[in-house]
Length: 141
Image (cartoon, rainbow, N blue to C red; front, side):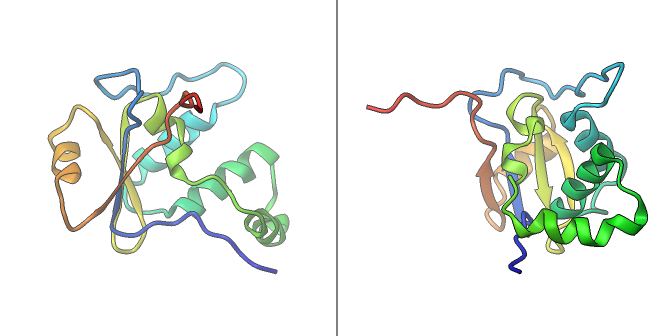
């Protein structure tokens, strides 16, 4: 079974061109169930450079499916046997103004669009610069 990955190394994902905020915002906390944006934010912000994209995405999947430890390994193999959307599709970069830096080990941290560190990453020629996906699709001609 082929295993897919969403990991990046030495990469910075900048906010989407149509991101509606000028200053990064913390995704709101819902009463009943935390949104994917909120879960991603909490995991990455509370543990900078500790997790890869694959680890974060699977952790959120496991939380939302309420998987127990005995189900984790088989579920992980099944989860990554299909291609998963990478962090370019995350609401953090599309809606909330967070850039995502991946170091040489593929571990990631968040940087607000309004910060000096964000600007430094955008201008760092040693990094691969990608942009979060736009929220709205361009009309085809």
